[in-house]
Image 1 (tube, rainbow, N blue to C red):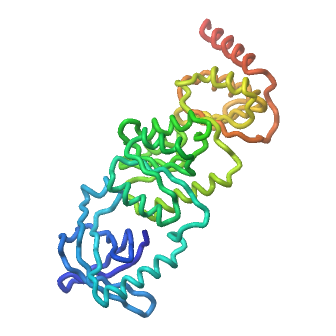
Image 2: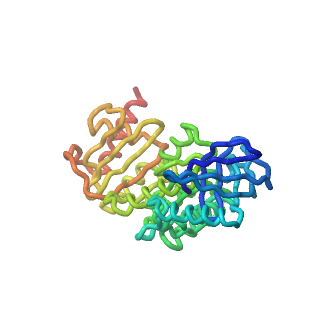
Image 3: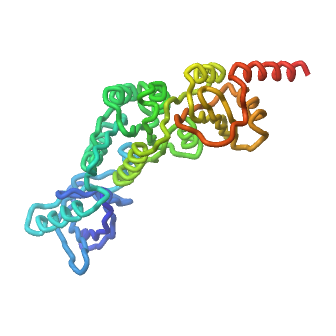
Length: 343
C-alpha cells in the first residue's frame, strides 16, 4: 500500500521505480515495461543515510492490458530472496509499514462491502483493507453485495460499475430503497471514468468515483474518510431513488403523509433542486439555476418526470416561503399545466 522510491539493478542497469504495494516479504513495483517472470534483480532502498539492498525474484508480471481488470498499473511483483540481506531488508519494510499512520489499523472498527467481478482484485482489496482496520465482506455481483449489506449494515460500500446480475447503479438504487441502508455511502469504481460516467454516479447518489487502475492506499484513504464522515455527520440520508420509478407527486404525497422533515434533493440533467420540508409540508424551494422564487421553482420542479432524488433527514434552517399542502401545490401545478396546454 505504501509508495516508496526504489532502485532496481537488472544486468548492471539501474532503474528507478516506485512501489504500489508493500509487504514484509515482497513488493509490487510499477513499471511501464514489466520484466519477465524469473528475472533476478537487486532492490535498493535508501532510508536517511543508510542504503539497504536485497536480491529479489520477479514472480509476477502485469502488462498494460491486464492491469485495469485488477485495478493496477503495469508492473512486477517481486519476492525477496531469503538470505541475510533479504532478512534485513524485510525487517526494514516491517518498520516502515508499522510506522505509517495511513496503513496502521484504526481503533474504531469500520465495516465495508467490496463488490467486483474479479476474484483476484477482491483478494487484493480484502487484504489491503483488512490490514488497514476494515472488516471486509466481498461480493462478485450486485445481488451478493446487496445481501451482504442487508445481513450486516456496513459503513461504506465499494462497488464496481459493471457488476454482473445487478450492476453498480442498480445496486445503488436498491440500497436507497431500504431505509436502514439508504444512508450508507457508496463509492463506485470502474475502468470507464469519463465525465459523463462520474456525473451519472454522483447524480444517482454515489459519494465518490475511483477510476481503475488505482493504488490500494488511494482506496483505503478515500473509503476510510467517507466512512468516518458518515459516522459523525448529522445529516442522515433516509431515502434515495429514481424519480421515474416513484413519480414526484407520489413521493411528495408519501413524505407529507409520513410528516417528514429534511431536505429533498432532486437532480435532472444538469439542474439540482432542493425542497425543504417541515412535517411533510414543502416550505421552501431552490434550484441551482436560480430561476425564480420558491413558488415558481416548485411549479417547474413538479413537471420533472425523470431524475434522481435523495432525502436528507434533519432540522433545516431558513425562511418559510411556502405555506400550502402538497395536494394544493399539485392541484395548482395541474391547473397551470392545463392552461399552458390550452394556450
